[in-house]
Length: 245
Ligand SMILES: C[S@@+](CC[C@H](N)C(=O)[O-])C[C@H]1O[C@@H](n2cnc3c(N)ncnc32)[C@H](O)[C@@H]1O
Image (cartoon, rainbow, N blue to C red; front, side, top):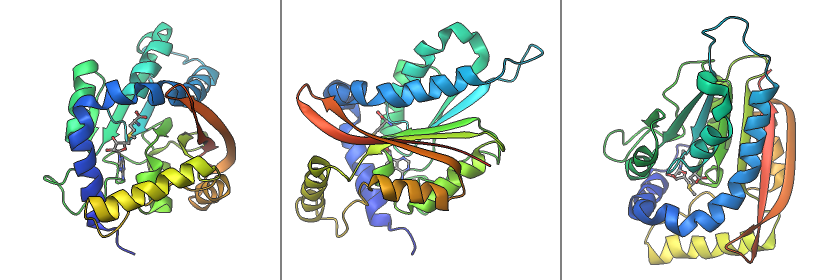
């Protein structure tokens, strides 16, 4: 099925309007949710064998749906002792979110798609060469992907062979609170915002693991857990890790 432009447009409009206050409003959600994927990525980076000859090729980390760059900032701080050996890159379809990220740090940030510059290109398409990246990470964005297997195959394409690693953290539809929130979001998007289609939505842990396997990844592991956000909500989350064969 061809991806619906209506959904992309809706998401784009949502983040255009939210960009300037995203960090201040969502910090109580983002900070606790990013802890685990950041730990996973840092663990993968530190586990890699040290380069034999300087100047060594950096470990490249691509954050898909990077938003305002909160995860990239965290990764930068948590790997600062490695000097220039970690190259952080963010890909994001909203120019307004990227603008906020640019104000906060200087890693390369790439606009993957915007309603104005590439109306037919799905934002899941990544403007990177095959096998160019060591780690692909994505946080709190997967529920927006329209064709999830295609998006995962695209992530797999840009990962290096034999050990390129995937880390995705997103809402987990195993949890009642997530289901209820998504139901409210569907109603808001369909009726209040006037879009005929709701956004695609979160998946269960079982579905997530299957999607990642179907996209051709190995060593698929999924952790399902609640994160305390905004001080008192326990938000259902999962983090999937996998490697490219
Ligand atoms: C909830 S924000 C999360 C931002 C950031 N990853 C974080 O954890 O703070 C979701 C982000 O995903 C982006 N996004 C939405 N649909 C996307 C898609 N199909 N492909 C890539 N990114 C997408 C949005 O523009 C938005 O910046």
